[in-house]
Image 1 (cartoon, one colour):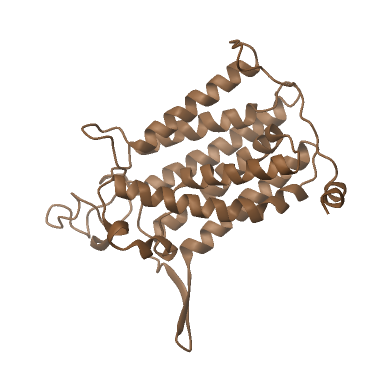
Image 2 (image 1 turned 120 degrees about the vertical axis):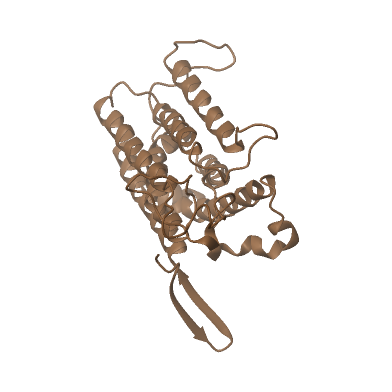
Length: 298
């Protein structure tokens, strides 16, 4: 297996370590931002807005991702973070949840868009492919940390998980010996699904650019990300479930995403009409030039 620590440097009484987890997560963020700027420019807006909002979105996303992971762990019965609260900020061990990053990042994204008077649908449609792309790029970090794996498998792409990183019931080495037991790489399945979903969104955005209404790409992201998570959850026995059921909290969130995405699409194209939810505009409202907006706010 790959050592999770790339390099360690001792300076006086301090030890500085560079971990693959952090490097790949930041690489995923960079990939997401790059693709978002490409889409933002394609929609006719200045991508400088995207770079400018990062000082809001990245810290919020990291905090949210960690807090959701911790909450998920506690719901699963772990007392680690209750007994040792300081371990919550120990990010080098891994443990970030995509839903938390999306929730907190979206709140920061929305606040920024409101302050700059940006079209929120334009922002969301631009970021949708990037979210999937960045998540896929960062997924190999789970392989290095030996996490997010599924049940044992005889398939040729099964991966080895050492005893230290196993969860029950596969901790029994008599039944599941280290040298012979291989596991489903659930993280890889999600990575492949995300790459496929990115391709679908980019294809739709370009093939039907004259027919797509504001918010449709984001709605499609909700559906694709939700469906992907529903599939992956079948290979995620580590996820906490509602008491007495095999239905995880993550699957509930994914189901709500799918329903919300389908509803928005149906409402946008007026296939269903709700008096309290209008279909909205047919075109984006393009923001002022970034330079002009900065001068006004100065």
